[in-house]
Length: 438
Image (cartoon, rainbow, N blue to C red):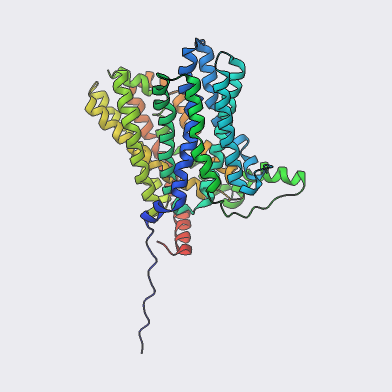
């Protein structure tokens, strides 16, 4: 009796293939495009305002234009369902992306033309850059989710983060160095010209292949763009599961958010470090360690999917806050500070790709921009609230007590993770079976 040949085993997911796909390096250039305007309406702008003799109160109010990014979910439905006359031939995602990029360019040139001496119109131009920068972020997130499957999202997030950090360096350190030799007006013109690279990328990039159902009546269009994105999530997962998932999203990044707020600068100073030491180790060295972490996290997602790496990196990221106890025991020690920043930034970077890949898996592609903007806002909100009260907590418990509390905040989210394991691990296995991977 002939022996039947064994069925071929499903191919293992390829980390190399995930990073080598064209979409990964398209996302690097889109990341650069997103990172560039962010500091130009916040930290870097404050230096320009200060040199023009603007009052401190006006500086902080003007430089808070970056808060526009926190409210981007308000107009995100437009990017899912609105059409732009003159950009339609590029498709829904690339059309909005090009529109936003051109808006950033126009806003930066307007800031250069007006200068802070004409403060009111200058502030209007600053808000314009912030608005179009936030709109660009919405479009880029939606493009990333729709251009590649969930298992490829880790690589896309990693390359996006690399481009984003380069954009921040150009708009931050490079812009400041240039401003010592050139006028601020010329610096902002050069920053606007740097947007030419991502604009060209948008023109040649591939539009995601997503079939969109569009309403024809005004009432149906309002329901589709505003109400459906909210109700769809509960419809797909059911009220009980959706409620647990949302609670998990609210809790799992609290330890991370609690150590990136305003408490850390006073902490480092109280530990006896100079501003130069803090800036060199936390802002320059730390950024590149974070990028290494992002690529490790991206490789984990490419190899194992989003769910398992998410649980591992939540624990690692939360427990890394215990490293600050070493710093309390060895104040002023640069070697210990370097060790602490290495552990914290590496684990923070590793957490990013699984988080984004998991959020992306929850999104319905009929409402990509809206739902992702809402879910990502939920993830960051509680940690920011904890950061708001961080000073009072640290005053009552001491720095050591505060950091221990941030680690204990991991426990509720991990209990929820264990409860959700069966469902989301099953979903990943079903996707792997459908695509022939394990």
